[in-house]
Image 1 (tube, rainbow, N blue to C red):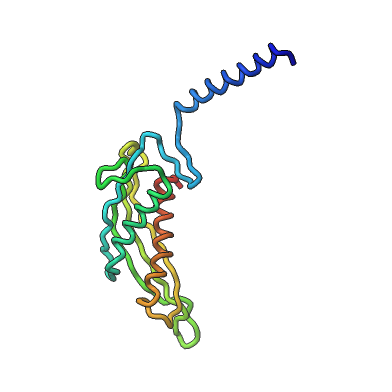
Image 2 (cartoon, one colour; image 1 turned 135 degrees about the vertical axis):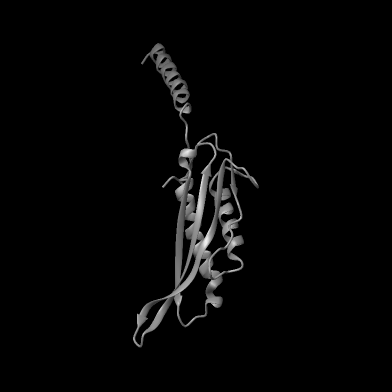
Length: 176
């Protein structure tokens, strides 16, 4: 190729890159490796305290769930947290905290017990109310029935909170 052809090729690449980036920024949606797809005009979020309205109450669960959801959003998005009136708002309540026998073995005894937590969440996208929803999410963990709940509760809650926050994140931020 001659110098003139190289120059034309270079100018064509620069032109296409410049024009192409201008076209695509007009309808930009931000994606990240965490699966989040957030509109560029969304900058903040608020997670309101999630009270425990279940019959059986774990006294720490409300605070743990609220903080776990806040931490998840801070870790996996570039959004700033506000105490109230964020672009994205999460509120809700814990509606169920229950244990139930599972895997019945001989003698009608349970081999395992299942701890289930259900939370009802209201998600409000103040930049696009078409994305608003209200849903219930449940997560559970099984443990050996020979164990006392209070002995294994902390480790079970870590797993359950991880599942719940992942499901809430996927339903809101990742739009799954």
